[in-house]
Image (cartoon, rainbow, N blue to C red; front, side):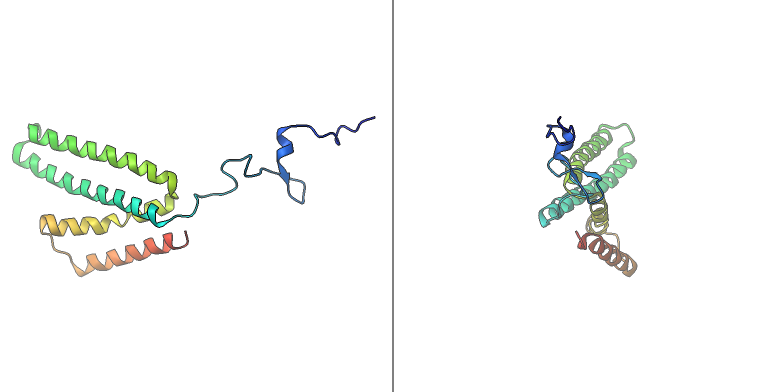
Length: 156
């Protein structure tokens, strides 16, 4: 008489492994995500792509400020203001598309920590484009934020 437990059947469980306690564990081949909780290691190319997207987002902030001056100069429903608002929406759609692409490659915590570097770009644009002054407190705050970004992304 044949023992049903000893017969090798081709079943989904036959590809799984078990730990010493006998609990079933999926192999990386059967589980595409594996047992990893995050994305593969981050590299400089991902950081560069992320910073380009953050740079674009900071430019959208400057474009929004320009559009607000169009509203005061030409009115809310002028063709200049409508085109300006449309360009902001188009730029935001492009930004959102590439932000989603970045999130596929980089952990969310790393992506959002690097998004804080957008403050550097915004501070730079406010000084260059709108002649706003940069205080020592602005610089100190920016250094603290950039240090925090390095702490978060340093172990990735």
